[in-house]
Image (tube, rainbow, N blue to C red; front, side, top):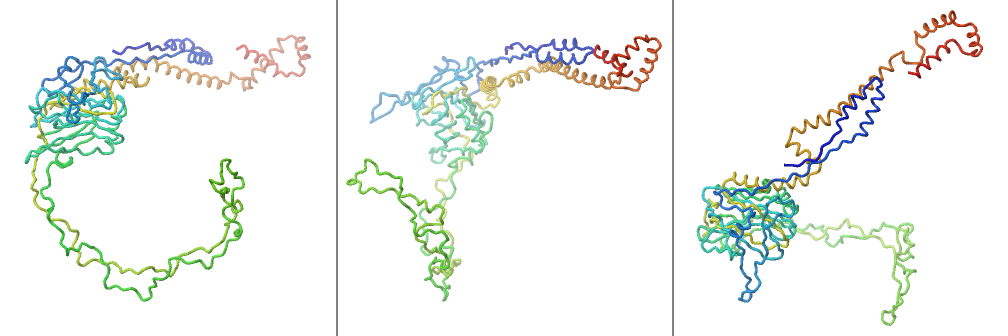
Length: 574
């Protein structure tokens, strides 16, 4: 389960908005702004939920399965090569296959309890192998092999392939080496800029029982770009090979198809030789004319053809450009040059200042002696050559005749390879910490997919979780728990909708207030009537002395002005 920190949002925002709603809409807007600026919405990101890994169960029907999670099982199943290097006919005291193998967790984002086989050393030969639970016989069921490879330190030069060793009574795993017969070699290999995804099978000639390696065609440009990431990204990759009884095959990397074809058509050299070959004892006849074109024997050089004319001649009409400095040399001695202190006239000769371009010639069209330039000779024709015509005696390009191939055979089912009895890893690499894991050989695709789901897919899931940013992790977790989106709407969406609603309604109330003709100091039509009535009442009920005093003090004030003053004071009180 993924542990959540606090997801706290100020829900009292809604209460404050309702509490501040009153007659004075300006105060509402001001209070709302204060709430928005002072309310802290704090969202904590869920911590990475550890992906639960359980060692996968091994289906009894498979031919081989290894998860490397058990030290005891590994020691029983796997055998390290003890082949020693031979030198001058004597065994050396140094093992040839002396590379170190270790069962340990991955260096990056390892699943709890998950381990793999790691090649620890570089620049050493290393070999290790294990027998299948039962030999795989290529009969009427498809062959599936898959495993994980992780170049944890990158790859400069070396491989990450496996060998499926041919089944035989003479097979001794302790003597496994590069000469041990194998049926299939499969996996990545790289040195410098040259990278390959090997699929090699050893084909047995049904006619003479000789064995020849057949190499799969290279990846296309698009697929090669996908495959190149295997060596660079320091992540586990699932590599799978499927061979069908109809001779078709598919190769995938991380469930993406990168190569496919047919054993008969997409390997070099071809499985079946040509039915006819060239006769090595056949020779081209002496009178065989294989010239397509010949010189026209009837052609002759024209009488007016002059071969003595040169290709170029002097331009007699050329004149020296204005400003040409004939008396000035192109190069002059450098006046700023100084004879070196260590210059020895006896040893080095007379010292001379180095030459530089004449500064007087910088703005001139040229300096020194002027000569007329050369131009193409219009009379030049060159040496006459007879024109070429089609050869009437042309017989075509000669080829030796074809004869029946004495070594011809036709194998319609190259799928029926030599049985496989063991799986081995035999490498030499300039990189260390090469990680192998979850190797499986089966004939059931459902088992292969389930095995990959329980192993490889979990690793990728954890890597993606740990590398995701805050937003991505929240979205991924919410997608797994859709009910959270309803919480987001209530906790975050509802307050935002309320704020927008109240802000918009406040603007409308202000507009209505400005449209009310009673809420203004300007003269309105009904103000004139009101002033007349009030003036009559004041004359009847008012004190004449007070009126006279008011008239004396406000001699310049009109009745209209008297009426406006109290209304202005009333507006300020409001």
